Length: 129
Image (cartoon, rainbow, N blue to C red):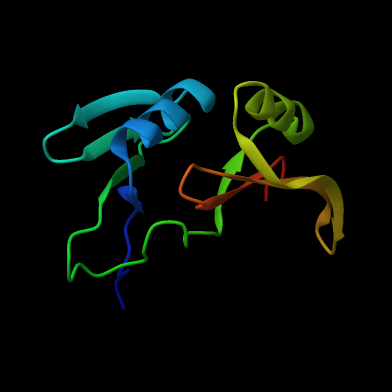
């Protein structure tokens, strides 16, 4: 049987305010902005270390997908999540779960959670497996 998934092209979020989201992803997370179409309320950012795009737009009436503020489970990596969280806070971001060490069957790692202006939550971890 052949694979049904051959890669990850993009992670798409629904947002409520393109300018507010643009400021957060560009200035707080310092992701590289690839496109901002104010008329279409659409933004595209590069995710460091990957070819995967982070795209976002205002959810259209009747559009499928998760409403703004309900995304979770996307995990970003950083070798020192505590330092990254401190920097996110310094730049005006919100940490919703402070960094903590997690002991698991595969070893220990640090995990934290931050939120964008709409409340979409992202894991931040130094886990490598």
